[in-house]
Length: 204
Image (cartoon, rainbow, N blue to C red):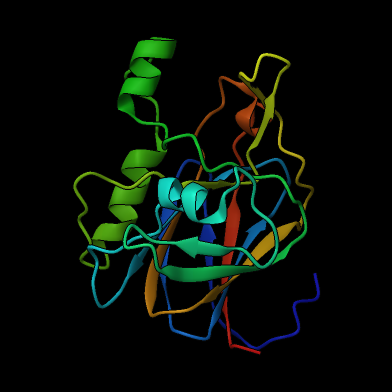
């Protein structure tokens, strides 16, 4: 993968875990699917005002769209853009579904001991002193939801291949956290959880 900018920091996200990074205004964040077909649950907060965060529901309104494309802003709950999608090698993502959590696995799958993205993201954010209540809904990078003829969602395996990525430009100083989605019971990650990689890059 040729990104062509100086790498400031690299953070590996092991399977079933989450990690966070600081991204300063003008820098770029690259979220890389290392082995392919791995969803990354993403949340983002204004570093100066953690009460402001990227908000999928406000994004759908501000973008007048349910799909993400290069050039789109990631709008906050204050309807301001915090980041911008500048490069996308996949073109299919989700910003409707909440992060999987304890109750998702308990209620829908009868599992009370399964890792989940909600807890992963909260843990990653705590390292930066951010403790949101409640946790905002994420953008689910690389998640492949398809609408059927009735307008209902069908979850299919991601389209991402090894090395595919999205690149985001920070428009404010932010903290971002990403969880390598823990879902191995449904086709969300192709029934297999694999690592992700974050790279913070100098602006271009």
